[in-house]
Image (cartoon, rainbow, N blue to C red; front, side):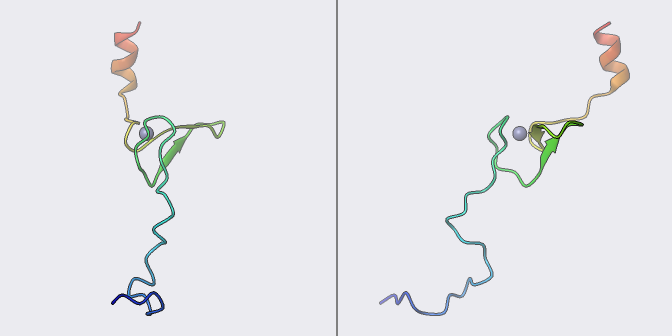
Length: 61
Ligand SMILES: [Zn+2]
């Protein structure tokens, strides 16, 4: 018989009803958003990657 007033063993875990943050760009669950110079969220660790500026400039010249 489960008793709801038993001291929870998972006391220090975050409440389960709190949904994880999701990236507004790719909808991935993430701990880190990326924002630009103006404070706009432009992605997260999942959908932002570094691009070599020299290679990119060469390809798009
Ligand atoms: Zn993302």
